[in-house]
Structure formats: structure tokens, C-alpha cells
Image (spheres, helix red, strand yellow):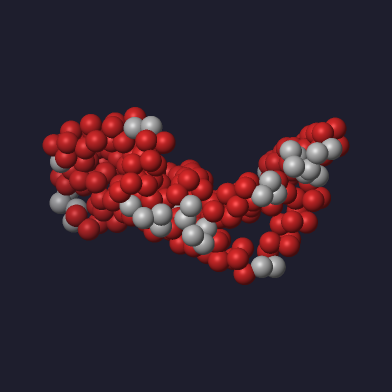
Length: 250
């Protein structure tokens, strides 16, 4: 077991080492900082950004938009998934809407959002429209795959609804719930930042990336990209930790 744990830790480190090695070699070959800066230069720029208030202001506002949009998506998806599982008419009513939301081109949504909403609301609306169907499908699948015979047996023996929900539904759904949340949270961050770039949202990571691009400051652009990756990774770790704390029966 210990060897397996060490290997699970070693493989990502090897992948990172290969990635940075390729980056270093490519930078040495190109030798044009505007196209591809040296890894050391990018991380040096990241350290400089971390020391500024603008960096933390942008991180904070982007994180706030991420939490707001994700909380709305998650809450609504969980509610509608439960209703769809209990009442089939609700499922049939929502099915075409979910299909349409998946099929609509992201760029069309962004452009329409820029017309309809302010630059602060646009990123959250776009993230919601794309993340909500994913979470809804994951939650509905988890709820609908619960052992029906077990539920029927519980009703036969007149087990209270509170016990059925707390002892059967929640323990069964919780692992899938956290898996869906973990896979969607990092996507939510990427969508928020991409929409911030296009909508020129003030006090955001997206607009800071756009400024770096306008000034051809590739090192800063990569530094902001690294910050976005770290932010997504930390959020995924937080969800994984919550899963371990909540899903103790696993």
C-alpha cells in the first residue's frame, strides 16, 4: 500500500518535470521572450505579482464570482435533480432545456450575455449556463441509481421518511455528489476567467490576463495562468478533503 501511495505521488511529479523540461528546451531554442519566456522568468514574474495588492484583489473578485455562480448552479441542480427523480413530468419538462443549454455555442452565450448583462454579471451567468447541466445530470444519475428494492423494503417496514433520507439517500448520493462537484469546480474557474477576459470585467484575473496580452508581457500572462491553475487545484483539493470528512462510511 505504501509503495502504491509513493507511486501515485511520483507519477504527477514526473509529469511536471517532463513538462518543465520541454518548456525550458523550447524557450532555449526560440530565445524570444515575447513568444515563450524562460520558466524562471515566468515564476519570477509570479512572485512579483504576489507582492502586489492588484494580484490579490483580482484573485478575490474572481474567486467570489466563482463561488456565487457555482453555489447557484449546485443548489438549483440538486433541487431540480431531486424533483426530477420524484416527479417524472419535471424530468420530461427539464430534458429539452438541459439539451439546449448543452448545445448552445459558448461564444454565442458570451456575446448575448454582453448585451444583456453588465460585465460583472456576465461571467457568472456563462459559468452557470454551462456548469448547471453537468451538475444536474450527475446529481440526477446518483439519485436515480439508488437501490429501489432497498427503498421499497424500507417503506414496507414503515421506516420513517427522515430515516430513509438520512440513512439511505444521503449516504448513497454523497460520494457521487462530491465527485460531480470536484469535476465541475475547476471548469467553473476556467469559464469565469475566460468570460472575464471577453467582458473586460474590472478587478478580475481575466482582465489582468488581457492587459498582459495587450502589452505583450508573455511572462505576466503565463504567471497569471499558473495562478489560475493553482487556484483550480486548491479548490479541487478542498472538495476532496470535504469528501473525506463527510463520507466517513467509505
